[in-house]
Length: 234
Image 1 (cartoon, rainbow, N blue to C red):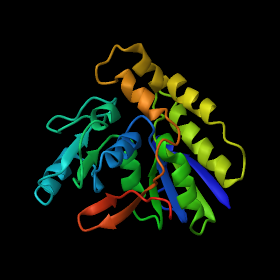
Image 2: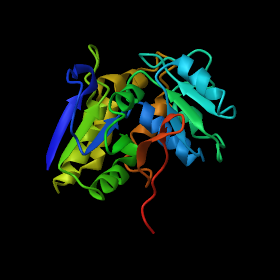
Image 3: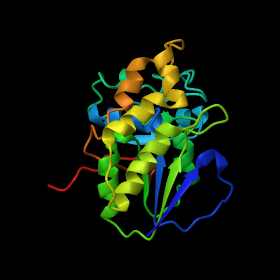
């Protein structure tokens, strides 16, 4: 098995032949998505722009819109910013969510034609690993999205390390991974408490390794990409 580790913002190739692609966004897109599913959301629709969200709302008028601009500030006109601590207490039973973010969602859109596509963060990393192992694996791509000119993206690299170690049968130190989220460049901005768009509560929720037992596969649906939780077999 070949494991390819790719930073979204350093990506130059336009084609690929991966069996599976995992788009990783720990702070915060796919942690927020996981907490939305835990709150009862039926499905999540990733879209690239606010305009696409508006169009999709015509078909899904009861959807909750969640979005953020580059840097993490809430997207104007959306119900919520990209914040797991805002999503966690909601009752989203059977309600769809429309999600638009500058990093994680863009990775999903970039690799939308992959045979198997997953959204992942550390809160559901173990479940993502199990889902990967359940299918054919010769070439796997782990796409980290948090690296920017002023950010090391180590929160996403930690998640990629988890998945790579699991795929290779190597040990996983979950406490060390959680610490890397808190100590990453972006993580320290939440700790600083100087930006109301980056609450410390979000960081703590995102650093809870394997909190959930579902993976988040992404498929092509009636209105574009759609994400639904995949629970382990019973």
